[in-house]
Image (cartoon, rainbow, N blue to C red):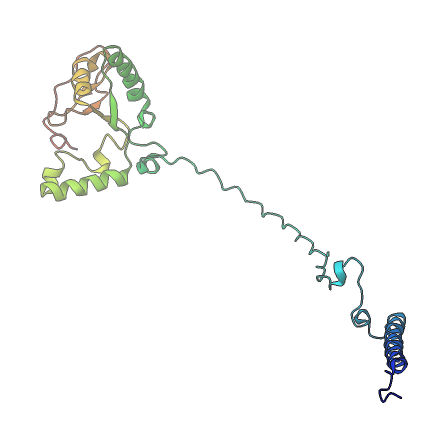
Length: 232
């Protein structure tokens, strides 16, 4: 009779089968548990974040800027510009107001006799190529008085001053009966031809001073030395 016992294989097989069965059961339970959780969605993170339409991948959308726009400001009407009055062209010679609206260079301030004769002489001189310019025609009493005072200061005495400038009551310029001309060529021409138009140079010391002293076509009277020589 043998002392060796045969191996207990059925017991080992049984144990192995039980282990495999337990593992299968545990796996089945775990699969079942997972399916139940997914069915109930008890642990879904989707409930914690609301899904917004248009947000890709469930991301939170960027804040939408308001489409409201501030209406443009109503344009204010531009103030109408008040047209400034057109500046009147002032005479370059302020002495016009002192001679009844005529400047000293204006031939129209002269007496009608001297003005008519001088116009003819100016036209004749122009035909000869000489331009006669009026430097001083009619003057106001105020201007003549001012010139006399300046002459007294310049020459040192009233007597010396009147050789060049007479007082207003004696001046032919104040009456519009005398005219001073220029340039030198005009003085020479009128001194030579003025008698034809009744215009004469009056003083030796003033080659620019002319008056209507004769009848047109007749010789001029002898000249005076200066303005104070025959002052009344």
